[in-house]
Length: 309
Image 1: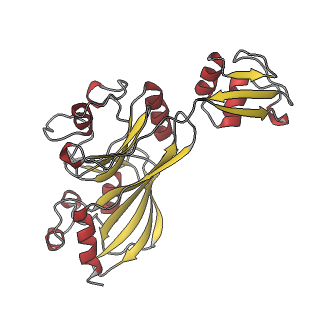
Image 2 (image 1 turned 60 degrees about the vertical axis):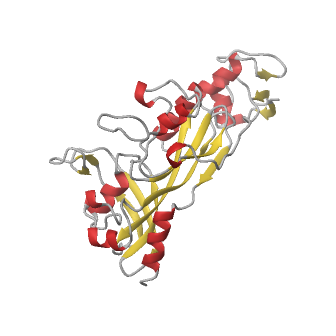
């Protein structure tokens, strides 16, 4: 069943094209608004218009929006410990465990999100490079937490655009060595390939624009727990930015963390978890938010750190 919306055209949109006015009134992309008009889901004072028609102040728009897709939530783990936290006709949100890559890549022979979903019989969007179809963003192999995967082509396009336009709220928890000063702030430093190490990244002149916001949640003798928000999404961005400040993620030996501390805390990977993911659903245009609990290894390490305060 569709959702009906009745909307008056305000004075500020007088003379605008219908698809443009509709996009602004409903918070849609202009392409999505044009699709609704083409599908006959929009009427002006009871008449079906074309997308280029000009609206007038006081016109009444009747819009039939698709009903929210039926969603299922599962706590069952797939192979490798991956968990599906949301599944509908357009997208899936998965809770990726450590040791699982987003998609196949040269030299990687372990588990992947794409492989898990295919093995479980799920169909995902075919957009994107062949080895990463449906993948609109990634987490490092050694980072756990939430990822969204597109199932429909429409969702793939919309989600890629949302990430590009920085309209997705990505929240991480990071346990870093030492104490940041100030306790909250923004790191605005370009990230690019490390000049000497092939598989590392670094803050380098000429790198891609990279912005990380952080806020200290807890300060302990050896380490601080941060809430981190990414404005951009560069490879290894949080790890690189924290290392550049000389406060690497605990356990991140690639970026300069203390191996003795990692061993003491029982860590075999960086302490970094994608804990929350929020965005506008590409079909319903409703805000959605998903959260992931800390995995056992990170929770255990944090409790050991807390015990030293």
